[in-house]
Image (cartoon, rainbow, N blue to C red):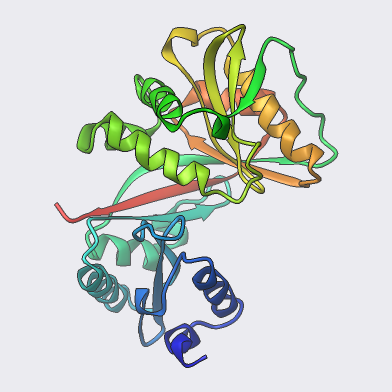
Length: 281
């Protein structure tokens, strides 16, 4: 357990979660930093990936100390981009309700760029109906290039802030490859990530994770026909039938078509997620 010494600076249950994530290849002791009461660890979405988000960030009482700790971690790991999320109940804001955390992030060079809806479907709620309009084939049964091409198409005209930023800074092919790698390394069963077809035409994708709708999208040529509702019904029913009692999802507040699709499918807003970004340039 000596290798986990840096994890010991995090109180339970964070320490046990860090050890479990280490076993999954998602974090390392050297990705963790502490200064007094301030602590942070960085987390990768899957084994072999670079860190992309902060994890278990607690700023302590002094935002300046926490900001310096964050800057040190970002510098020592040589990161180019990192994301931090503050999740609050509806009606609350980071500047008022988490001011130390907000000030620490801003002091470290983060910017608050997007507000997202936190959504939840709970067991016992009505399941969204399957319209029968689409058939589904597991994404993993397709050549990777086929799924990548669909992801590139879906990114065109996307209202999702993360996608828009990636398209502007890295391009559609890079964004698609990063998304594909993320989705095929999720914890959901291999056949849960599916392509929806109207006849022989692929119209979109839905990727349930072990407890969430990790991704959903419709190709531009088939938008405006309500297929997002069909894909969401498929993803929700997949998880509900697997016994998942709480299915979570998130979408940008500004992405009203997707938000409305979730609300019509029986999801309810349970919070707001405020997403901060740090970039090296």
